[in-house]
Length: 319
Image (cartoon, rainbow, N blue to C red):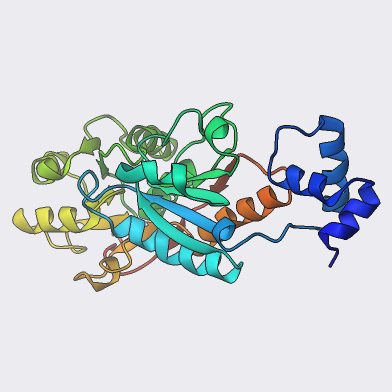
C-alpha cells in the first residue's frame, strides 16, 4: 500500500499539503486539491486516521420522544457489526444531546430514525458525512446522504402477497409517527391496492396513533375486510391485540401482515408474516458511504433498498 510520502512525491507537493487536503483545510488551491485526490484514488489511498478520527457517531432518537426503540435497536446491532469489521469504532449520542458533537472528533455520523436533521447547515459545521437511516435526503444538502427503504416496493410487496392468497378486501393501519413515512406509505398503498383493482378509499387506508388502534381496527372490520396490513411502529402486535378484543382469530378470520420486529414477530401466536428491511445490507451501505468519503470518491446521496417478505403463519388462503 502507498504511504503519504509516496502520494506526496508523485504529486510533487509536501507531506504537509497532503495532510491539509485530507483534513479539508481551506487554504489549498482547488487545482492542487483535485490533483492530489486523483492520485490518491488511483492508488486507492486512504489516510491513516487516529483512533479519535476513526469514530463514527450514531445519533439516536431520545427515549423520551421515541419510547419504542425496537427498530433503532435492530439497526444499531447491524451497524455496530459492520462498522467494527471496517476498523471504525462507534459512539452513541442521543439527538437531545447533540452539543457533544461540537467537541468530538469523528469521521462520520449516522442518524437513525430521524424526525429532522441535527442542523440544516451540517456541511458548513462539519466536513464529515452525515448518513440518514430511513429518511429522505434534503435537497442540495452538503455532506448529507441517505440509506432508506423502498416504500413503494415494500407496500406493493405486502399487498401483492395478500392478493395472491385470495384476499380482495384489505385494510391498512399505518403507524402515524413523525419518525416514519406515514403519508408516503399511504400514497403507495393506495396505488398498490388500485393497481390490483381492490378497494383503495380512505375507509381502507387509515393513519393511526397508538391510542386509537382498537377503534380504527373496528372501523376496518365494518368494511368486511379479510386481511389487515399494519406497517410501522408496533402496529403488528397492537393490531393482533385489537383483533383479539373483537373476537377475531388470526389467520382463520383475519389475515395479518406487519413490519418485522426481531424480538416479537416470530414469537407471536401465530407467528406474524412481515415485511422487513435487509438490515445487514442497510448497515453495509452506510459504511460504504463512510469509506467512499474518506477516499474522496463521489457516492450517491440516496441509496434505496428493497424490502423482503418473511412468510409465517398469520396469513391464510381465501377459498
